[in-house]
Image (spheres, rainbow, N blue to C red):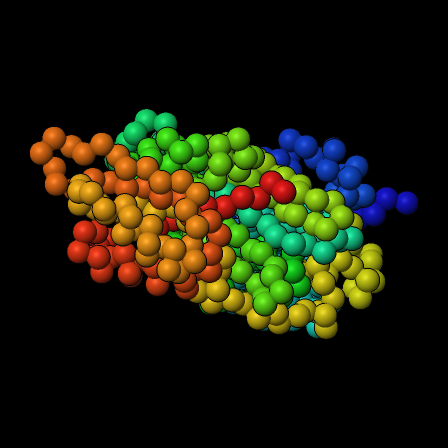
Length: 439
């Protein structure tokens, strides 16, 4: 006996919304075979219904009021693709209250209000699926939540913002300034008119909040993350890093330590040849280290109409598969059973431990390198490499580049202050972390 089609309400007919309709239409037969029944988008909502769209919407009931779709009795699943936070939160909670399953691509919504949303869904016995919220078409959430369920996750690290990665790639490959590449990224549609969420690390931090919760069974708490962007990086440091055999990448990192969790978004040096160092352009990649599986890697398009739609439709298929499943025996939203979420302590930035890249301007005279080495030695910081660059004609100062051994960030900051207090060293030392993941 064939099961009835599942009716879906789509909130948002933007790039991803239209991409979702295209994938559902083009692959309808394959999707039905996988889901066990047909999936029909019967209702959709958009602010401007007269706007031209690259899809025939004639078979869909269109609304300007998304709440009308959320409250439609015939709809079993609501797909939220409107973005933003407050309106999306109200709509998702209303859908859950109406006992409808939810699929969302909204990482900010989940990073900031996921606990409330998942608790509401648990009480109503409905599913909130969110694969598309992190890394576009890469099925990294499913991989961690299900494929690595037998592992104790040790760390995860990823390039999870395509805009920042595109900018750093262009700065490295073409030697172009940050502002110049940012303008190009905006003209190509890779960056918004206001790019601050991307270039200041906020978007990546929202995604890391979700990934860390799934990987380690910790609460969703965006406020605990340490976040640094890429807007202060310059071509000089990118070039110096490359001379030393490194590339600078913008990373989201979650690492379990005995003392607690490291949760940080930051630019860092990666050794050329490491997997993440070779991820260029707008592509995303995530590495996950499990105690049993070892390092595993997930690579692909982190954004785009059909790449993100791929994840949305995969979530729809999963939701449809679970419609006849006992709500208490489904895969938990955050991988761990709700009562087993563990509020592990999150470390302060001063407790982070890594190697460092330092670039400082020092007076070009005898004894200065010895002074610098003495300061680092007093803080028990080893020097892995040191290079003094050739001074420019007539310049009294020279760039000195240093790679250190691993050290707690608090001790590194003390050393930096001591270096900047030397009369022979200028203030404004560039300090970047050096990371190694393939072990």
